[in-house]
Each structure stands twice: as structure tokens, then as C-alpha cells.
Image (cartoon, rainbow, N blue to C red; front, side, top):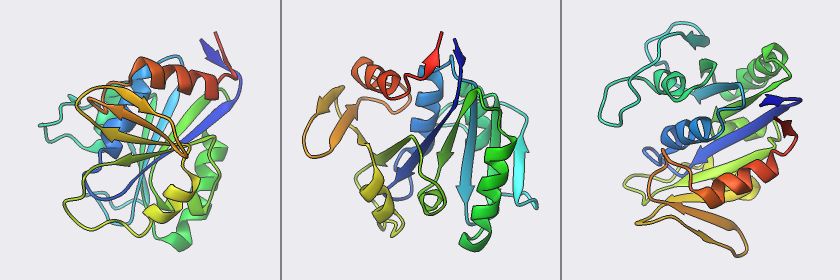
Length: 191
């Protein structure tokens, strides 16, 4: 399949270890027909001095491994994988640069809550887990704009209500109902 427009997805989360990276990898795997650029946005350096770093080595994509999130994106099938380390003041210009540089026939998945201050995605998904630590204040914006909540559960099922909720046995594997919903939402992609 070849895309005829750029799709933009944001995956936010309610706290650390909410499953954002695993969900991004699951989405990339579930939609291999889209040439994905996956972008992790963080406010603290992860061993790179550049504000924007492009990963070139795929990790083994195991949960227990020590590979970076950007390595996991490549292992899941992303065509490009970027790490952006920026504060809120610099983030808008960097996002504009990424959007200009990405090919129009493909998709971008941003792993970030703060990105929603700088763009309106085609889809916004909220990864939620039972919080072990503090809830991120930046999750408020994700809750306002999310198209669906994605939570871990004992088995795959969908809860329709005020907000759509997909319960998955694993974020790494998108359920058939969620995949059908994603394909409908991104139906501008033609095969």
C-alpha cells in the first residue's frame, strides 16, 4: 500500500511506564503499509548532545532488553526514528522542521504529551496504566484531545462510551477491532 497524504498520530501517556513506546511499536507493526517516522519527544537528554538525533540502529525490540525507545521503533518497522530533546519554547520550531522534512506519503507518530501544544494530529491516543508514580500534568491536554484511551487488560475488548477505550492484552499487539478502527480513521491511505 502507498499513502497519498501524511498521517499524524500522537501517543501520550498518564505517567512514566504507561506503555507509550510499546503502543507506538504496536501501531507501527499493525500498519506496515505506512512509511512511519517515529519521534520521541523528551525534555531531558538521553546521551545525545544534539537537540534532534536520528537513530540508525534497530534494537531487538524486547521489553526486558536495554535498547532505547528509538531503537525499538526501528525494530518494529519504522522507516525513520528520531529523538527530540527540547523545552517547550523550542519545541514548536522543531516540530515544524520535522513536518517539512517528512515525505508527504507516509506517517508520523509522536510519542509525547507536550506535542499537543504545537499541532493537531489526525489521531490522539492515550496510553494509560495504573499509576505507580505521579500523574503527568501534561496528560490533561491528552485527555482533552484523545480520540481513544488504550489500556492494558487481561484480554482484548472495546468499551464504547463517552470516550472510546481499547483494552489490550499487550500494547505490542493491536487487536482486530482497534486495527479496523485505525484503518477507518486513516482511510486516506490507499493500497
